[in-house]
Image 1 (cartoon, each protein chain N blue to C red):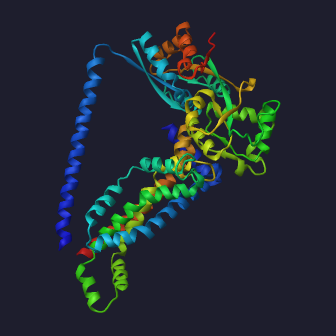
Image 2 (cartoon, chains in turn yellow, brown):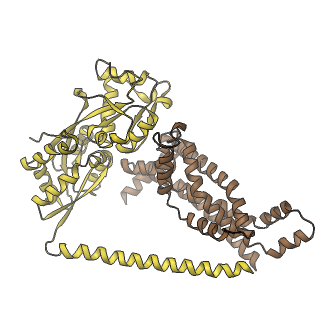
Image 3 (cartoon, each protein chain N blue to C red):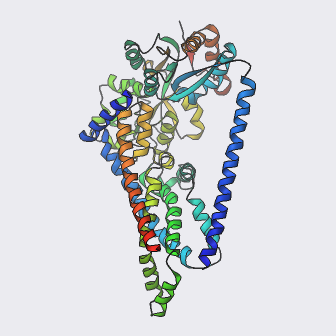
Amino acid sequence: MKDRSVRPAIWRVAVAALAAMLAFSVVGCSKADDTATTPESAVEKTNVVLASTTSTQDSGLFDVLIPAFEKANPEFTVEVIAVGSGEALKMGENKDADVLLVHSPAAEKTFMEAGFGTERRDVMYNDFVLVGPEADPSGVKSAADLNGVMTALATGKAPFLTRDDKSGTHSKELALWKAASITPTTTANAADWYLSTGQGMGETLKITSEKQGYTLSDRATYLTAQGTLDLVILREGDRGLLNQYGVIPVTDATHLDGANAFMDWITSAEGQLVIGGFGIEKFGQALFTPNAQ
Amino acid sequence: MGIFIDAFRDGLSMLVTGAADVWTIVLVSIQVSGAAVALALVLGIPIGFLLGTKRFIGRRMMLVIANTGMGLPPVVVGLIVAMLLSRRGPFGNLELLYSQPAMVFAQLIIALPVVAAVSAAAVSAVPRELRLQARSLGASRLQEALMTLKEARMGLIAAVAAGFGSIISEVGAVTMVGGNLAGKTRVMTTAIVQYTRMGDYGPALALASLLMGIVLVVNILLTRVQQSAERYER
């Protein structure tokens, strides 16, 4: 009998809670509509979709770059979708993005050859760093060159964490293994030392820190996250660690005008200046080196 | 529609050939969520039994907690467990973050309130008179409890299904505490996210179909339980 008296009370609470949630969501919607209509109604703006990589997003570059572009080109707004270079290129192929900013030269070349992009221009480069535990158990610091580094990683005891996500960073890592004539997945105890995260740079750095292993990271993401990591830079400045970014407007993009405007601006003196200055205030060093022709 | 046809063809061939370790991923999923739901049953059914049959101070509070816990956001569970197990966290020296036990622990926290709340509802649906009658016929407290659980068995199966369903398709917590490590902590949901991010729709769709299949089986089970419960009421 008691149970029966409890149940309606619970139902009443449930209905009240649902009603409250609905009310909140309605209020939330109308609020969002207000903010969307008032300032925008004056000028009709075109929303350009920029597909780029998680590492660029994580570096914080877009927080500076996009507002500067929108100020210089008030007729456009930019929406950034941050994914791996692989999916960014796929988005271009499916015309889900108007313009790409990626760093995967080999894949970009295939993309251009297939006619998915109207043109490709160099924008900037940054460099990769090899990070690992301070004690450097595999001894990568003392290796003579990058090939020696990769051999030390493959024969050492500490794990190496690979992003394994077709990102620009991942293709750079694969190129380094290839140059050293090592196929990590076919080594004797690959399951023990070559660990695939399949995730973005930030997550992979976190996992590397927890496992006290090694990984290849772009400098920007490492510098942004280093305070929360027990990892140090063990290798930097080697020629093979440079990372070139390219901008590609997508063929038949919905907003090709916006895509072209973005490409022209980011490779202009003005855009290049913004890139060259980014990071100095926060990290004491520029994170990207502009090199548009 | 070409995008779906291509992905479907890729995914199917992947399932048949066993490429991309699809079956390892499925196995890890079932292992982790199975272990979590088993532990949730061991802990949750006794809690549900107490909540459903006994009257004690704080019972209503516990029911509210269990019912609220059913809507516990997995990402919040993931965040807390990740912080606890992190090298810099209080249990860092266990070195458990990004391992299967960490995933089981997080999923247990998600499934436990579901199992407890559903089994409490199931047990409280057993007529009180039946339990009193059993006692008057000389049954011990343990016998009475076992009889009640036996009467509520359909509801308890529902608890299993609901608990399992709540974690097998969960992605937030397993990503944060598992890390999606291939062959170790990569499960169906995290692999789907990864493949989609990489633009590999084929394997993503293949795993999505398998996941849907598993969820479908769970729901068929739940529906059958509900129908037989309706018969019981009449």
